Image (tube, rainbow, N blue to C red):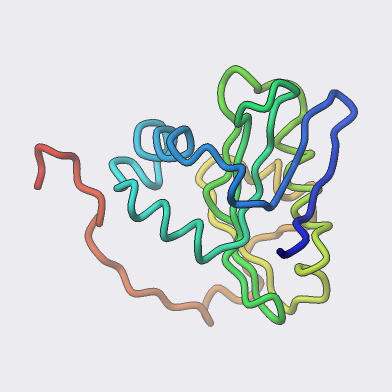
Length: 155
């Protein structure tokens, strides 16, 4: 059985990379109903994304899911931070900062050449941890697709 990365917050919260601890229903609910980037995402897609990423679950002292993020990485050269959220009832306690700090400290994410993320409204949070605007955005390309998660009445 692999050793999972765990850390304990001074207020009793626990961070773990053990995917078996994740409350996938709560994660799916928040991503599909509340996020701006994955609204209407299917649960099977969330499950596949978690299975193919390095997931970070943050749990309240009572064991309930409080926050989540995942990192898509080859653990050698590249990492992409995504799906970061803190559930509303756990906000305003500094947990988002602590979650990002602990994610960046993970042993498998040290010495990478590139660590990326995309955000609409949290630039200030991530800049505190060294993220900057792309130095050479002219080198980056993307393939744009229509929204893969249409609202149920749009299908």
